[in-house]
Length: 298
Image 1 (tube, rainbow, N blue to C red):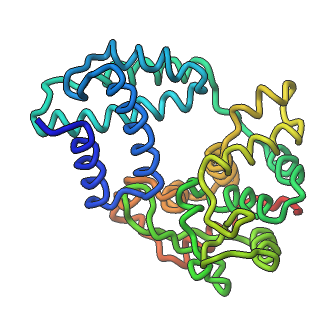
Image 2: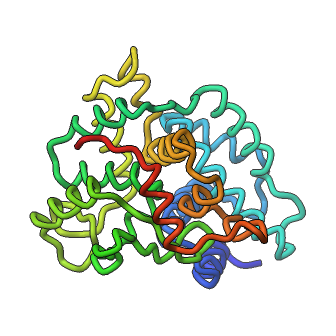
């Protein structure tokens, strides 16, 4: 039987082989190493545990995590144990039922905020940092996921066509999104003051590529400062970069953007499953985007 370290390395190497996003691999590695250290302290092996062991770890070691973080943590364990099950190291996945219960509890505890255009404006204007304003505008104007935004380099931006090439979207395939003149101004302002050690578009004060946790905290901080919602602190806790993606989708749909164009812009996993008679060229997607993307006056 392989050691705990060998089991983790084998799983992570397989993720690399299949082109999993680096940030996703990094998150899973952190969870698995943390859990492995706890197992080592108990003298246990990955393959010998049950769902009770996982629940014990969550209760004693991860009690301070927010619900969203607990869901991500248990999901990482589930994918790892599914890998072990497929390779016959175990017969049942001990994390499956825990993930189901966690997701159910998360949906009951946190409802996704529906931000109006005015809410979006307030949150973005709450920041005076050109980098943070550029990131939030890009989230809203493109519908990108966090890991998609953070992998961008300067050369991924086509200024002439106001188009951004995303090297890897969900599932590992590349994609394209568009932006408008408001987003263009914010991006160019940020780039004019940006100091970086490489070509990364969004960097920290050391000039290094940002990490997802920093971006999530930034969005929540500006949501709190903006005073959005009756109870701004509680509402802001649920406002993440993904809520901007949700607003992007909702507002485009409200402006009667074609559903298939929204699907393509979002980079959904089944975006290539278009109707035979509903194909769109890149120019048609760009025109429909420009017709329906809300203007914020920023």
